[in-house]
Structure formats: structure tokens, C-alpha cells
Image 1 (cartoon, rainbow, N blue to C red):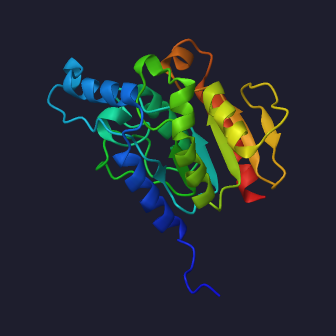
Image 2: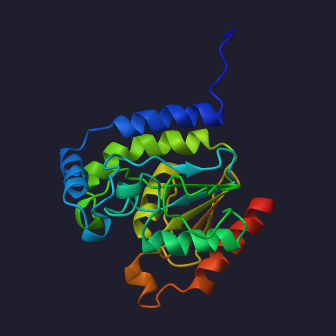
Length: 230
């Protein structure tokens, strides 16, 4: 019998974080994330940009996994934490706070005191892509990281996907066939008793136009809380 035990969720996630942050496998993404870090947006000219791959963030014992698309160029690529420092994050963390998952409604910097309880936030692509559009090759190169993350988060019961990209990758990883059409509020029951729950992405394209409202987002996380308690 092997005397070695499997890594705990926290240990496995720490190893994953180390590997994610060190990754330079996609030349286009490496060039872009570092260029953005040098050619800063005027509002952040005094900031030191993270400009590296962004690991997941949250509670290692989470029952809720939130899946986005990729780090934002002047958000997570600047701050080093998912959905932190941009308006998309403002929407997401306010909703998580209202649902009891976040300790505060703002996420502005890695040292702002924010903690998550019962939730983990990640993205299938770990580097900021130009125009927020990773290529299929870049998506597939990052997929092993996403798979390791899902495996380490053994307590997850509900996976909230923000947008069609995250939904597609999650379905591929989870072997969902056929894949139901994506739509806000769509639920997909998985064979292992977990649930995939869909939401429009918290991008400004959706929130500024009213395609996604705060009550709509709140309804998703209320449902996630209900499913997580079952």
C-alpha cells in the first residue's frame, strides 16, 4: 500500500497556482499581457501590473465554482486576482456578497481584505487575451489547468458559468453531450449530481445594455445557494 496520501484541496490548489503563474506556453498571450503591463491605461499609470497568468481565487472547500472567460487586461491582469479592479468584478462581487459568498461587495486589490466563503472563482483561460478573444489553441493549452482545478475542488456541487465561452469549456471538461443551448438561467443536471447553471457574462456589454440586470444575477446565485444546500 502506498503510504503517500493525495494532496489536500489546499495543497493541490497551491501547486496548481505555482504552475499557472509560471506558464509561458502561448506566445501571443504572453506578449499581450506583458505589453498591457508596460503600456498602462492612464488611470493606472502608477500601478505595477501583475501581467502574468491569473490563478483561481476563493475557498478551497467551495460548493460553488464560478467560471468566467479570461482575465481582463486592466482588471485581473493588473491586480493579479480574478474579476478584481474592473466593472465586471464590481457586478460579480456585489452579487456574491448579497448571496452570502463574499465578505464584502468590492474587489479592488489583492490586499483589500476580501474573502470568499463557499465559492471559488476561475476562468478556463488564465491570461488576458487581445480583444477578450482567446484562440481555440490557447483555450486548449489552458484546459489541463482547468481540469486540475475542478479535480482539486472536490466539494463543488454547483458550477455557475458566466457566458457561452465558459459554458462550452465546462461542458467539454464534464463530458456533457448533447450540450443544451446556452441561455441565462439554464440548468444542466450532471450524472454525478452536480449542476451546471448558466448566466450571461458580467461584461459591460451585457450590464450597460440591460441584457443582464442585478436581479437576474441575484436569481442565479440564489439558485446556486439552493442547489448547494441539497
